[in-house]
Amino acid sequence: MPDDEFLAKLKAFEGREVAGLTAPDEVNQAMIRHWAQAMGDTNPVYVDADAAAASVHGQIIAPAVMLQAWTSQGLRQTSAGRGSGDGAMSAQDELLNLVESAGFTSVVATNCEQEYSRMLHLGDRLMTRSVIESVSDEKQTGLGVGHFVTTRIEYLTTDGEPVGRQLFRILKFKPGTGRNAAAATPGDDQSTAADAAPRAKRPRPGITPDNAFFFEAALRHKLMIQQCSACQTLRHPPQPRCDHCGSYEWHPLEASGKGSIYSYVVNHHPQVPAFEYPLPLALVELEEGTRLVAEIVDCPLDQIEVGMPVSVTWIDADEELSLPAFRPANVSWKSA
Image (cartoon, helix red, strand yellow):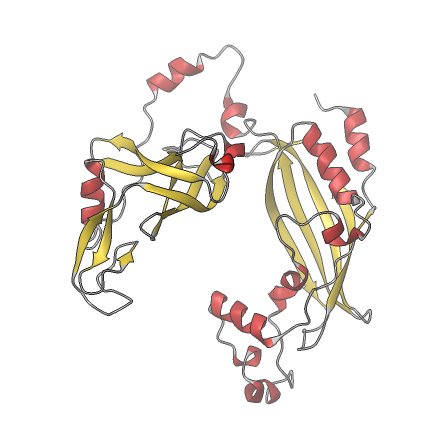
């Protein structure tokens, strides 16, 4: 049963201003170029001064959907870093802390709506004004029970000229209260039901002449990496030709199975029946130098960190498929 007093505290945040942001850099050609290349957008008005001058814009413009990128900040910014200036906690920080204190600790961005007043030009420098637009009543969603938090953001130049607006919505939800939990009824014998319904098989990988060796070796619990026979460069995923020297000759090299987490993500949704969720996936950098994506196992989610040493273990999905996974190699790695 939702707590009316708690909901009233959440609703009290509606209309409160959030500390604004000022872009660290002016709109610039280098960042526009990187964005366009990453998105595969070949419109010349973003990078070609002559083409832009001949267009209706008359000058180089930034892609409109970059609006949020100019003021985006890093994951570990403090409240002061987000613009409060004196280190004080912003209204948004207060709201999120309150929500999390009630157990709504997981988060997912649900949607973003943008409107544009004008195109951005080289030399523009942006700032934001933000307001907590709304906090929803408690909702049951496929991910879990939670509250939708919507923020309204206005984008202006530092001279005060409006350039765009954005509504950004997130869902803060309680882990373990999603679709599967909602389907259960009191008194159900869940273990019996699970035993009666066999788990779906994991999706089959696409086997090619280039990667067959990897999956054949995995069935024997051996982690093999493709190595160029000409220049000895390692590469993964496997491919027919070496990007470094152009050779088509290669051989498999058995890796030690030791490495560290280069990056990771915890997947909550969408859910595939063959997997258990939350599902931690990491980009692991092997000590040989190459990287591969694999599950992290035998490690609490809140202890997974970039740089953590890991070692290979194996998931025997069925008689036809074994896959490498990684577990912590040293629980006390920070103090090592």
